[in-house]
Amino acid sequence: MTLQIKPDSADYVARISGVDLSRPLDEASVGAIVEASDKYAVLVFHDQPLTDEQLVNFGASFGPLDVGLQEKLMKKVQDRYASAAISDISNVDGSSGDVADRKHKQAIMNVGNRFWHSDSSYDRHPYRYSILTAKTVASKGGATEYADLRAAYDALDEDTKALIADRTATFYSHFTRQWLGIEDRPEDLRVFPPVRWPMVRTHPGSGRKLLWCDSKVCEISGMSIPEGRALAHELIEHIGQRERVYSHYWQPHDVILYDNRSVLHRGRRFDMTERREMRRVATVDSSEALEQAPVSVALPAGMLAAG
Ligand code: OGA
Ligand code: MN
Image (cartoon, rainbow, N blue to C red; front, top):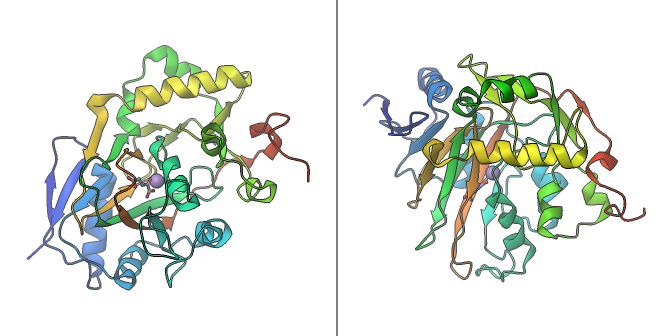
């Protein structure tokens, strides 16, 4: 059986069948998946139960996998998997194996995923593809939503296109955590120093321009901090308009490969007393942020504890 690509009603989403992701992929299949992702950005595969090793191998067919997030930050919360390439996107308490209390760091960390974001947009070397798979799903809610940054750029009015054309935005990993009221240790706040990106980028695979803004944006060049944050908020609202959003309601063993250069995503609310268990691997992109910004840009006086 050969790979089949069935476009969804959202024109940047496709369902892929005719491939077994647990087995090594030949070059032609990898090429076909990359080509499909340039067009569709969100590729949904159903009924693909993968062991951790198979998930890592599938991800690694698309490029080197990131281990930095787990090594530098997440393993301080918990470290359940043999491979640092796997991110634990679950509300499971690693020490008991049960559903984590809602105040557990693991549960709180995932609340940050409810804001529109591109994985690792705050990193100098961000992610290209993320591959997310569901093991145990919530009985209600818990969808993951995707929104196309290329369509969002196209739909901007000409004044807004001109306003952002030559601006850069500063992305800071802990910005949403601060908004949520999570108090992180000063040393953790500096693990990923803020980075600056152009607000308009071109997606290499499709040649399309895209609006590069997500909930990590804490400052926009040439604007006061409040003006920049208000504009970022407005742009994220524009990106997340209903007609541009695909909501994925998970079945166990669904796998989604999404291109972080083309779409934002967010996790939706669910009953946190239920178990929701996902795993993710991600490839590192070759594009690089323009520069690092000082940590103090994102941390107005008083937010950064002494030391
Ligand atoms: C992620 C993420 C959202 C979700 O894994 O990168 O943002 O629905 N997940 O779990
Ligand atoms: Mn994410």
